[in-house]
Length: 102
Image (tube, rainbow, N blue to C red; front, side):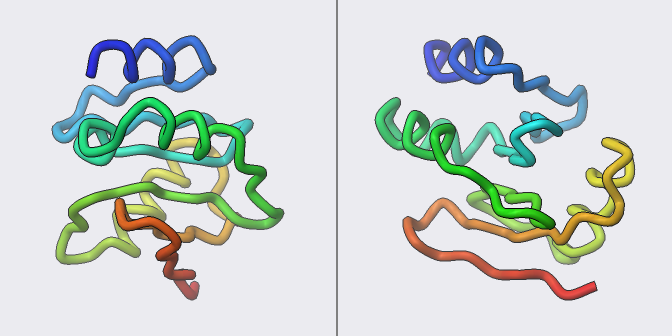
């Protein structure tokens, strides 16, 4: 997994100090939990990094969601000073996405 974390850092992502660690890039409008990164190979991560997130969305890639994922995503967007973006939760399962309503 160290190679995947280096790939995130080299791509402009910053890791949070909270546990679990969340890697975010406000320019690419994506966030990855460390557990979802550890669940997939480098090819999966390269494919996710190559995806273009449509405006006005921000994609969250998580394996496990908290009891209140909407609140968590909105808190992350608020910290990134992007509260107007629509959080879209993409679990670690391929091709699964949940648009979170405001």
